[in-house]
Length: 247
Image 1: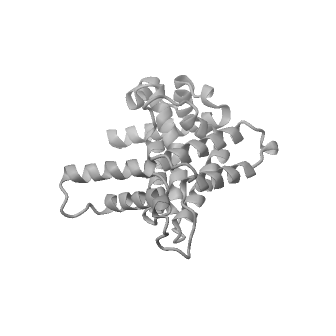
Image 2: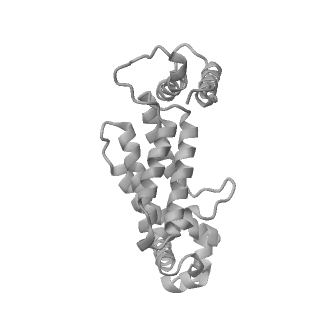
């Protein structure tokens, strides 16, 4: 067996051992000594592969997130981006409640500018779903703001539910939070009107839709600087406060 194969095997054994300890005893059980002993790997190897305990925990978080990401990416589109977003929310909550130790590891220790690679990938999936909603003309704010709002509320709901004993959880809380979040970020459905007379009311969603389309296909005839300026203007329109009496 080559050195690379030996290294991969040791890395996999350490991650699986750490994941088992995390599931059984929580984060406090994942010490470098305990992980090394459970994996049958010497401690210097652990430090060489992961740098330190934080590096190991990041790898464990990614390991626990892999199945979630695989399930989320494997979902076939319903043809309705709003319904796809709704299903993505439900899968996120299901993951958190089925693997609470991994979820708390990923989201329970927020540090400025620190996000695991797996969490960054999941955020990208969420942003992609919301961008599809924007391209369909159904988003009333910028993709970035909508993604941050959905992420903040979704994570808050999961952390709250995790803190409650399973037998006492009110899972309807997730549904209420989901639908209220969707109401906050989506434009009203008006199937009988393609372009309403009160165009100013709908201006943010038009700006968001155009911004999403520009991400896919830059405007012809614009320089890179002009393209960037146009995107800034559209984001400002998208996130501008609604006039009094509108919203």
